Image (cartoon, rainbow, N blue to C red; front, side, top):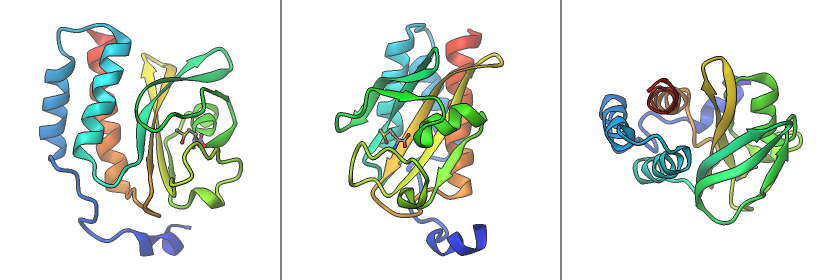
Length: 167
Ligand code: SME
């Protein structure tokens, strides 16, 4: 699959506006001293929206029992509840693994909250060993997210987890 999809990923296409180290330092500054989960998730989604080009939606879904519930986000109104195992977000919870989807139309069970979305990156958020939320990022550009983008966003989520849950 990787070979077939590599046509999407040109070097430096859609590059973030900050290096990973700069972005992590800025996010840490934004979150430090505040413990409120909603406030920190809101600022994290706004920060990601400001540094990652070519997005149409970025935000959190929190795990409540066996479903995800919409949290702070940037973008158009979105579906509120997603059962574990459904769509890209529910698959992230069911597998515990980041989902990087080059073409959402070919992802079985993809939930189309925003018809402009063509590619998607969903990263698990953990408190200790427990998965508590996912960060969902959508783009109108097919194949928007490279493996480097995945590592970049995972590093920022690791920063969010440290600030929010280890503090
Ligand atoms: N596309 C997601 C649903 C959430 S929205 O994109 C904001 C999914 O398939 O899980």
